Length: 158
Image (cartoon, rainbow, N blue to C red):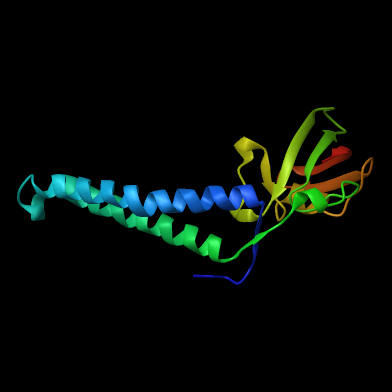
């Protein structure tokens, strides 16, 4: 399953993921086993939709554990306190202004596995993320996005 690409994380995020994985492997698996046992108790397994659903849920749960183990096996910790703030890089928090709409947004640039647009975390491989990497404060950046060309100005880097 491992693709060989590193996943860069802060120490805090690595610890969060390790705790989450441990919780899934212990309590999560116990809960899955209990669901299956409860469904099995409802009788004939050949006509037991609840049992089938519980087994399918267990399979998806185990897949999630496997994916998380893969991410952790490729994880590399980055100390953001030693990174320069004059240039955008992985784990930079960047405030940008859309030059057309004048809207200001802030993003944290993360590896693809960590991206979560709702939390303001965008992948460095996304159109906006890849356009921002290596840019400097005050620089104007053009992004080729599915919606068309967009122009941004970098107004803060943390």
